[in-house]
Length: 96
Image (cartoon, rainbow, N blue to C red; front, side, top):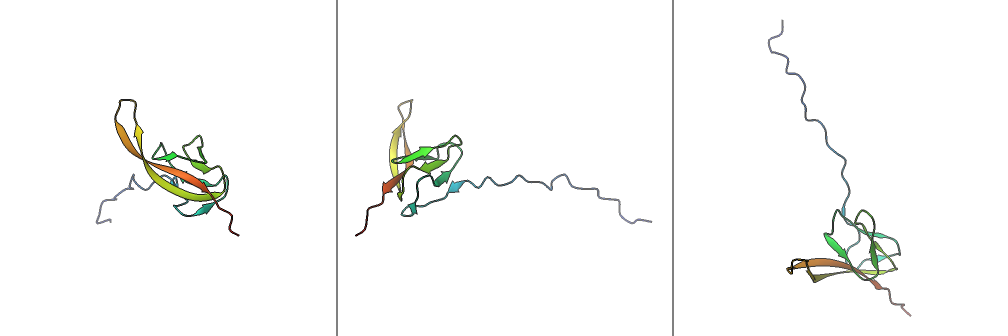
């Protein structure tokens, strides 16, 4: 005869897969054209020089070069300004 009542099972043992978002190439790193720089949902980071945005807000490099991050004030539609981090690709200089 059992001395404890059966506990049953839990309803919790699940989780969703991670989306692997975030910065993939940091400032000062060299990149090739087409490389993914940042995976994000929404505009946490803004595209700058020689970059473009994919349909899921992913920022890609247009040219080969060096990654540079900068802060910029962006005017919103209501007149307020917000500080945004902008990602640029600086063309690599030829070394002789």
